[in-house]
Length: 137
Image (cartoon, rainbow, N blue to C red; front, top):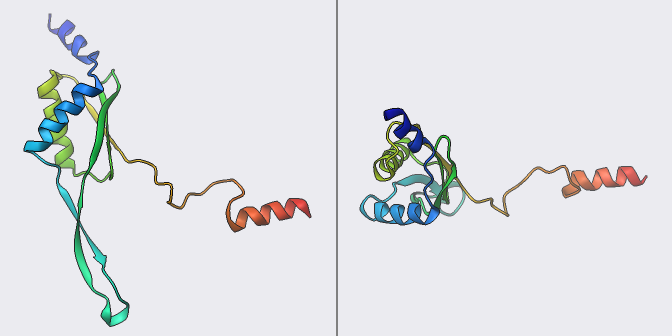
């Protein structure tokens, strides 16, 4: 009865292809919001100008990463997705794939930037060279 149907929803698996086709249709009608960011355009001192830049959320793909509870990962260029858009996506997932009555998690992930500064315990950088030289002396 009701308990069995809820348990079936709790264990439901949605393929990545179905999720991405669904998101493509959804984003055509309701595109993701753009965030506004103030940036320095050029110059220094008095010549410095500020402009508002629009940062568009670009979604690479959507996949289900866990079944109990249904957990979905949205891979995009930014992780600062507005809470209202997250709620919209979760409610749309529930409606489209029959997940009403069970908790749905949505995680937003961004790709790792190979150019970002990362703190490592390795021998990279000045601190690592000093550590290496200290061991050699």
